[in-house]
Length: 209
Image 1 (cartoon, helix red, strand yellow):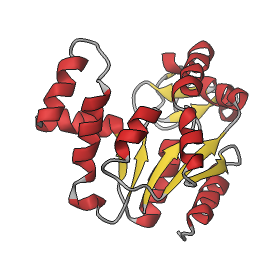
Image 2: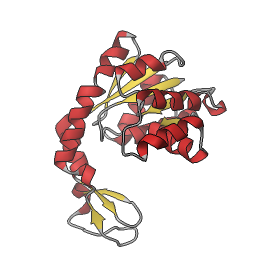
Image 3: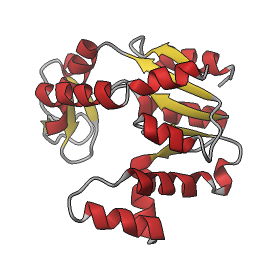
Image 4: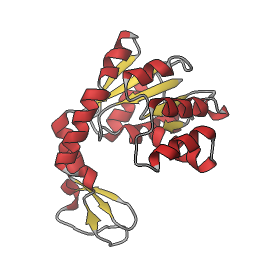
């Protein structure tokens, strides 16, 4: 089963993709991961991507598309995969249609204010990377795992989150209409808790854990 996960920043796409991949025994394809892998392995497209990143520029669509195409051609994708972070725009989706057949698109829906509260309340340990939320810390300021300081990452600050959501709605949200017209879109409430969301996605896909 070839699946795309859509949803705004903080909706839980990465976490849910990992859980669904484990249940279906298929790989999670993250654009960030495959970019880093292609650059590390020194593939032709990986080197192209590196030339833009080294200059502080965005990697162009054609390079991203080529890297995704390379990744989906690998043996571990033969029985399916989950695309997380690609496509981000309708032109990318149209390009994907030329070399892949998508079976289902999961759109995790979460209100913007819930996402702002969720992300701006997140705190991360500077040493071990453990993640917490202010609502669960009861005033604690250090990591319960290693005792180090907890910080708020810059991209979790409320103003940054709002900007990320603005970019998402402008660029990525049109994909919802694109896949809805194709009859592939399935909307799932992403604010119902980790386990309930997971079970809802499994049910939507007609799968069992």
